[in-house]
Image (cartoon, rainbow over all chains, first blue to last red; front, top):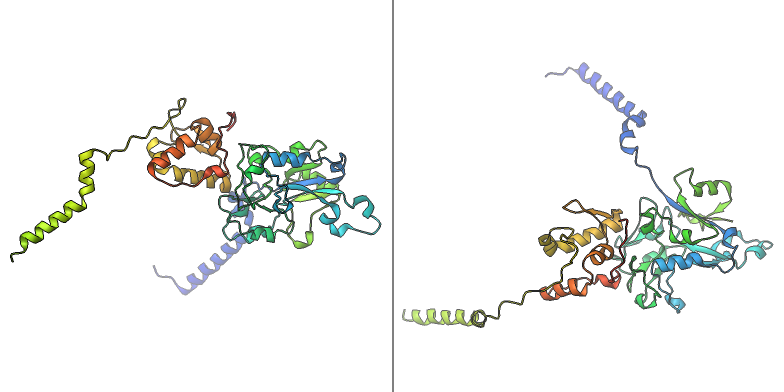
Length: 251
Length: 134
């Protein structure tokens, strides 16, 4: 078939218009692939006022550490922790004023892995043993971890612990339903991904009688977490770093 | 060329010498190892895959299960007979059938002279009580 110069120009012009129209109406082209794939981003809000109601309470720590076989080493240098208490001024150094210190100074704040939206720890792993899942949970593959501890250096929150020695002897009662770790791997809070898979809330959230820990989907505008974050003043840890933590604190 | 008988004879002697352990084994009938006696589960007839496949490729299956659970959040395994299992070493393999890894995994590995990863450093090696929902 022979094509004239005029016909060629006409065809080129029509193609350009068609391509531009496709770009202008993204809904019609992409809707088929994107619909139905609802995104989840798990997050947590910690109500510090409720958390302080019962002094010395550590129900969430106990629940987490027994569920996940977290070893209890007496030596602080070997300590392994998934969720723990830290003094307020260490967690939120920016909130300190000379006059307000009295109410918050020394008050324990529950801290755990923030499951950041941009986690610096996963970027530095040389063996792809830690990564952020599609639902926002930052997870570790203990089979693959080589124990280089780059991730521990990268985490600005100190949320990761290293097993300097065999953790088994330091576990008071092994929960057979969850693996222990071995010497030479890094571990941290996994947002109870094994419970999420069964549709259960994390162990710490379920154990908190004061309901100070609220867990939910940050992508769902009507979830309890989002409702709380809308109605209360909430802060994240070290927001200036741009890691976008999924754990929020209601002051 | 008068050396031919010497050469052929020497070669024959060499072959006989090299293969002598085999002839010795045949003569004394010590070649056959005692068959491995493994306690099979009493309540289940079928494994998650045919026994022949499990015998040769259980390591690939276990590795696949591991990657599926840890990396892809796929925890259900549909077996060749349509039965659905949870991809869980302790909960499925150990608790439902092979009660003791020492009597099953270790025994066969020792028999076959095959070294394996030590799963039991981390995974619980004690059978767990049955769980309803997979």
